[in-house]
Image (cartoon, rainbow, N blue to C red; front, side, top):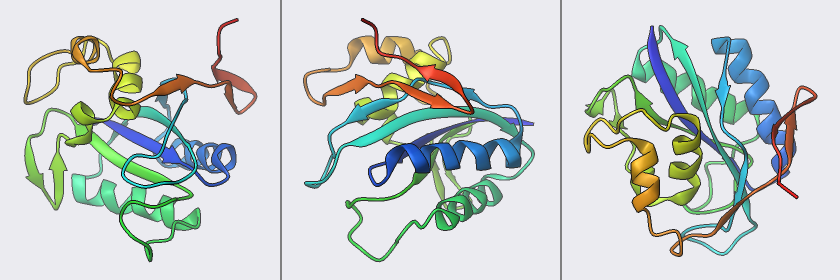
Length: 172
């Protein structure tokens, strides 16, 4: 079984669609490991702030089959694909890594480039899997986050519960 890390984001009815996504992932893939939930400004367009997080799970699906399954979850959660690439969305689920595969695998670029460019991906990934290494850069996600220019993109931890359990909580 392959270990997969996916990023999850929403800026429309955020709490509802993140919860719906986690429910669907749990039904489809079983046990999930979850990062905290972070809020960040929209990147690439003017829009409402996003909730973002990273989930890890194991699957026997191929990369292509997994990508289709994730797009199906997005579609069942009213994801519109009609607007511009950078626009608001109910749900966005992207494969970050699939084991240590590198390259274009069944139409999916692995590892996902966003890992090293977007705080809303790297920060929750570093929290969830600090000692895991980026398949290309061979640095841990924790080290990559330490080196990241945190002034370039703002994000902040938010209180969030799923299935009546806190998965993230602001301090203070």
